[in-house]
Length: 228
Ligand SMILES: *[C@@H]1O[C@H](CO)[C@@H](O)[C@H](O)[C@H]1NC(C)=O
Ligand SMILES: *[C@@H]1O[C@H](CO)[C@@H](O)[C@H](O)[C@H]1NC(C)=O
Ligand SMILES: *[C@@H]1O[C@H](CO)[C@@H](O)[C@H](O)[C@H]1NC(C)=O
Ligand SMILES: *[C@@H]1O[C@H](CO)[C@@H](O)[C@H](O)[C@H]1NC(C)=O
Ligand SMILES: *[C@@H]1O[C@H](CO)[C@@H](O)[C@H](O)[C@H]1NC(C)=O
Ligand SMILES: *[C@@H]1O[C@H](CO)[C@@H](O)[C@H](O)[C@H]1NC(C)=O
Figure (cartoon, protein in one colour):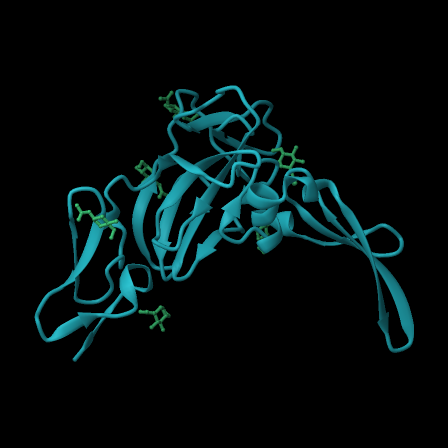
């Protein structure tokens, strides 16, 4: 996802570039076109211009505008994952088993879904689309929803287990949190690892140890404590 990151934060000029690479494989030569699209997609095409692979078909931890997350897909970061259920409910899981965030599908419309797809719009709206259904069901708005400017907004499952909407002004190299799924970071399962104790130092969540016989391993993000 380096390409996506560069496209968003470092090299906006790079995003519309097409690179052509000839790759020789023993008995044949295929031409592969690598495209960084202006929405940060990374596409591999073969010599007949067929799409072989694209980052948008394989989201990892980030969902960018024009990408869809279906029930069979998930965003992943370490042991954490985020997904959408067949009924439109959203879940955050630890190690694919423990649910620590569950958002019911809220809609005044009495709808049942068949194959829901989640996406984030360029103006900061997370919505669900369904096959055979016209119009989308709006579920989450970023705090800077529809604010003007050349702003890139995306949804990311961070390695601290929280799911956030970020905004970044194109070329600014900075990003701001505009929504987060779990408002109390200490409620993210496993955030401080086994035997870790989560608390706040006023502004930030901090992990501590249950006893003086333990020490923090690798800091807050890597998690966990070990015996001395
Ligand atoms: C999800 O996977 C199942 C089983 O592989 C498949 O039957 C179904 O069509 C897939 N759904 C979508 C939306 O891709
Ligand atoms: C995650 O789940 C797998 C399979 O259920 C299990 O073998 C593994 O120990 C779990 N990982 C942790 C860190 O508990
Ligand atoms: C979906 O969310 C609603 C509201 O939180 C909850 O009542 C329901 O049990 C959930 N359904 C599933 C299948 O998780
Ligand atoms: C939603 O639809 C179901 C089945 O069509 C119906 O039984 C239920 O009463 C409806 N609920 C509301 C709140 O309209
Ligand atoms: C995402 O889903 C929408 C409809 O919900 C569809 O129009 C669009 O083509 C899909 N995008 C991708 C990249 O599959
Ligand atoms: C709280 O912890 C954060 C992250 O470790 C640190 O940047 C900040 O300075 C700390 N604040 C106080 C008041 O100690």
